[in-house]
Length: 179
Image (cartoon, rainbow, N blue to C red; front, top):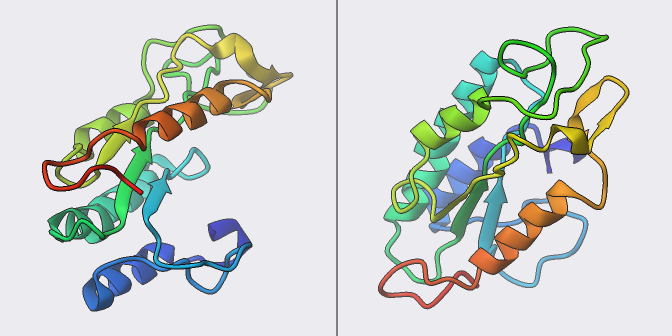
């Protein structure tokens, strides 16, 4: 959504939760919706500064995730968040610093994922938190200085399969699934 022009999507989500108790697809969507949004699969991504990333994550948790979780209806929009993919640059924390850095096969931590796992909690501000779990998959990046994006098919397909499989799990005691 953001890449097609909806810059303040979190603000729209917050307004919709406050006024109608669920989310819509908004005006900028590729396919016409046939009803309310059943599941929101969300991720902030790597293309922002760490300060902006943390601010956006906290805003998502406080203005979107928690209010949706506090809505008691089984028909509410379900929130699935998947952690940010690991970058595998040859730096102290694996994060991008400058051009010309080579990729490494493994990093010890993903600072963005670690922050996401500290702020987001399944059952509190998201229904499901899916870990990308890719610290040791650096050899699967595109390479040639790009240690952020994966070759396809590949790691993103595995995460998509996790999202699909998790969508069939029971979320809470009163509802039988996400969709």
